[in-house]
Image 1 (cartoon, rainbow, N blue to C red):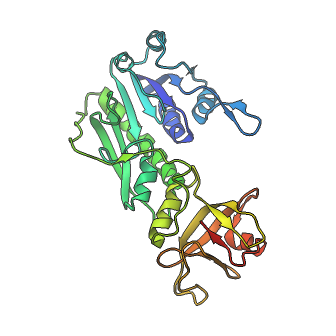
Image 2 (cartoon, rainbow, N blue to C red):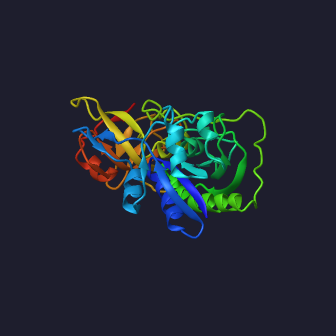
Length: 320
């Protein structure tokens, strides 16, 4: 049985933690390393992250120490862990920490490495228009996401799939890949393969400004941007609803290319121009219109775009 330290923070790491903790035949999760509670909401109340919540439910010891602290290696040794499984932990590990576990640290990364190393591989793959992505289990080294690969799996990206939806699928599928790779590694039945050298796209974190929707681009590009930024940080634009209304922020939660076979669909709209029908809301791009399906207006709840439009007074409206 492999004694495992699990390291992770957000909800995408929870399926892997639950799977490893539930496989008592092959694994013993001796402790869970995660980020400290963070202030959340208007009241800035300290809230445990999803991995900590799951660990407490499972009755597992939780470590919230910073790996950069001098005492961390001693604390790590006290767990008795032989190897670490890492999923979206969010901290860079020093070499002495990587060397502290006899069988090493292994990361589940949501791309087909060496492509899309970095913080936002799923979002960037959607934004780039890729049709296929996947998950990779590799041994962690000091260079970012550059360690030797133990296993990979591929999935097709759905035509209308958002980053959140794709991440959810990869988190579930990847948990099984991680468990299988760790078991094979422990049984000495797998040989890690070094990643090929070369220049590869880095998946930089998507900022709020990155999520500012551009409509002066082809429809497919605006659609990719919206899907890549959903749900986080959230695709948005500045709405000018009418001459009497002050500009406000409009979040676009779901959209798709307009059905040009629908006789009600405008043949063309200037970029950013919004037109609403009885059942549809369209916004112009540099090519064919984009249909808005779900939006969240400033200070309002998320709703169907057509329902929002009926009360929004969109005479001459546009987004920028």
